[in-house]
Picture: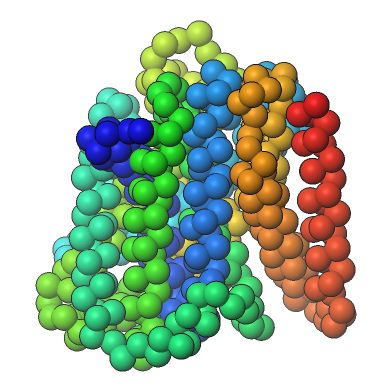
Length: 433
């Protein structure tokens, strides 16, 4: 059994993952869910946190039982130029750029709450600072410190929650009774995409190369649980918003509820969430590319030539698209929530790869293959995320084409998701035998 000191160290180590998923996307998506739908979407957040635990634990355990991180396992099992490798690279790079745009916009919005500086200068300052830290490879302590600042913001939201007149019956109904109304589908996908970030699976697998499974599991699950609690507190606090969510409305709401320190804490926490995630998104992209394509260098992925090109490209593209989309076409909140929905749509493909790899006897000794319970939970997450993603894609396609979807669509999509799960189960069984 791990000692309390070792468990605390593991929690601190894995706080990088919770700092990576508690970004502006989490704050925006959870706040909008609370302000627009009250407690109705708490179940989606709970499902996301549980799914995050299952997937991140499997990704972090993979190198401990196989000696290969997720990217290396994909390259070894399927080949560097295989469809699986190209799909993984495309998903992580596209998702990373979209997420990075939201991270930078969120950090700028948080800094703007405290400083009266032109947003363009803030984007440049944040981008250059992130680039320097990634180039030097000296960002882990800063990411952990910023995670503590985000946790402090969570406490400010908790103070707000304590002042609300909570309808406990409605809260527990929202937490345990799944419901998707006509306009909440993309938010459900967004809540999943902002919590179970596909590139975080590569990040967790890439930074955990040795150690004990038990101590890793304890530290990782506790760190994710803390992040999940912060997300739920933000959603519940936002149910008191009288207006539709925006960063300005949330800051004014926090000030009205707890005083000026609440607004300041929101701005500081939003900046910390954005900046810490602005470091981890390019980092995860560099780790993914380097692990799949391979390298003989013993340097960290962010300090290799190709790795620097990758994280630099993600950072620059995120800055460009963030400023362009936020300044020309949409509000920062809309851009950030759209990025979370995109990540949610990419999730099923990466989850399926992870499920098959963690059960492959060509990579892992038979006695260390994925346990039955974990397999069933992974299959369930693949099925749920595939179902939700297919439904929203069909709705989007119908809206673009000016068509209406048949009323009996959902059962048929459910059948497709079920067939996918059965096919994966059969494939997984063959790999284990």
